[in-house]
Image 1 (cartoon, rainbow, N blue to C red):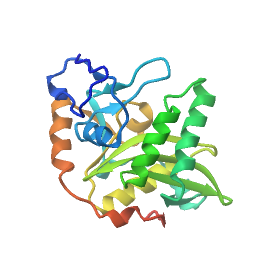
Image 2 (image 1 turned 30 degrees about the vertical axis):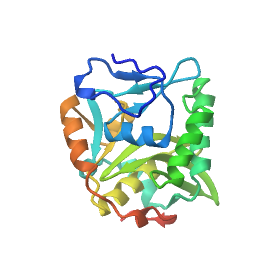
Image 3 (image 1 turned 180 degrees about the horizontal axis):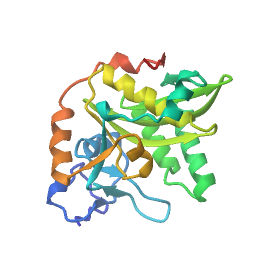
Image 4 (image 1 turned 90 degrees about the horizontal axis):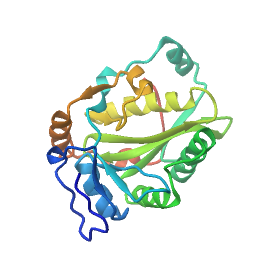
Amino acid sequence: MSVYLYFSDDEFPNPLNENEEIVAVGGDLSFKRLIKAYKLGIFPWYDRYTPILWWYTYPRLILELDNLHVSKRLFRIIKKREFRVTINFDFVKVINMCAYVNKQRDGDTWLLPEMIEAYTGLHELGYAHSVEAWQDNKIVGGLYGIAIGKVFFGESMFYIKPNASKVAFVYLVNYLKKFGFWFIDCQQSTGHMRRFGAHEVSKKEFFTRLQEAIKLPHPKEMWAPQEIFYP
């Protein structure tokens, strides 16, 4: 593992040359460093007891958008229009709710104040985006992530009402398809994402596909705050 405690530059090791999933330690959450990390498939994940840990997980779980699987039960919920779904209506609310719900569930959260501040800054710069599910004029679920090129890097989701975050996710996938996105990086391998149709790819395949996809631009106007719809 390459250890970069207090490294002063913004460079990361090539993750293909590393034998561990943690490829660097330390540094800070500056916007420049975060974007460089994501372009390499590296992301920060740590808690209040550790320094910043930079991960390149593998094999990597991704969702190719055409492979989205929606269960019959979830499809019925979507068709009933139980939730209204928006993009970028309230990023700060969504990321703070992700932190709050995770802490209530697990007793702690990796979404520390400095993480929330950093990703809120990325949102203001046009890189980080939120999806909100509404019911009775209240946000009852949602998710956020990073968009670079034709890749969406999923970060976290929450729900107060059952199925709210699932509906938001399905809406997001269909919205990304309209603009030619290639895949969603799920980062961690979970049964939840597998049930949506996500699958694992090798360390090298993920890196190769990522480098190709981030070079392709997407229209910035797609992230204007708006309500989105299921086809």
